[in-house]
Length: 73
Image (cartoon, rainbow, N blue to C red):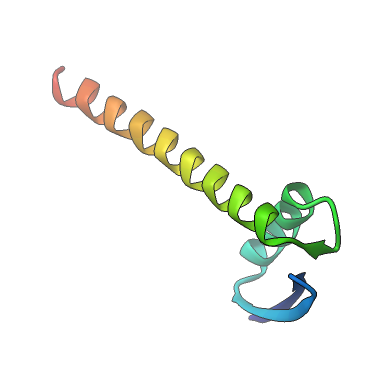
């Protein structure tokens, strides 16, 4: 299933086409949580991007730690 999410970034409208209903809901909720205004500024977008990359970095560290613990047993 294909869905479309509309966002306004730096006073310009964009439509994002997304495959899959579960991810569409997850993305829409994440956008609402990460951005407080309906018109996302460049600074907000960059800040959110860095925050998400850091979140992925922490998850990757945790996964590698779990793998190392499993490998050493």
